[in-house]
Length: 252
Ligand code: KIV
Image 1 (cartoon, rainbow, N blue to C red):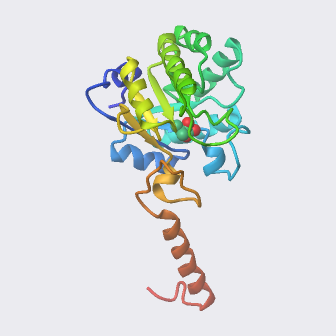
Image 2 (tube, rainbow, N blue to C red):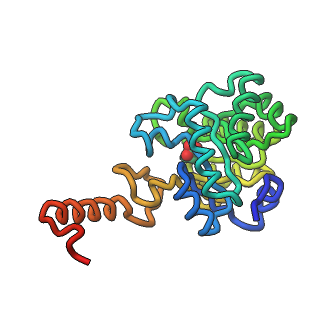
């Protein structure tokens, strides 16, 4: 059964939330079969699917395309669509672009940073919003851990409270010290979903390519559960050999 925003918020303090990203239909299908309750169609697709250096060139059209494919694979899973860089700078733009993702199949949208007025407008128009603070890749100069000094930690705590106060129903915390992840988790009423934010978060999210071992780079806070890249390479090598030595289609 698909969980809505209210049901996910109610899981705080009761049941940890497992979230994975997905960008295409077949992977989304496997995730739904596995029982993963929430799929994030993240703009991380720029880096892990398109080989780019950052997420800033992702467009709303890219996101519509991927949300649509993921929805087809996972009709009964809560899907969060990421609003790309510079698509939520005004209330009108945020509303228009969030509606495009909802119409493409998302149940809710995620946006990076503390924009309480924008979040409040989306929520008052019936759109469920996921916040995201800590490292925010759309505007970051590098991907190093943030929130290490008192001032930055205070900023992240303040942003978490602003995002929660504006009506977001989940909060992604990215690449911050474990202790800060714990402090934010204690101070907000909505579930925190960590990616490099320590074990105290109310849930955890991983980028699917990282966890499956598809790609050359693994962020220090990620965890790899399989080596699918190696399987692809070995299968392709075997096929190539069979074609070249003319055994393909000649053996049973
Ligand atoms: O785009 C994304 O996949 C994300 C996760 C890293 C949380 O925002």
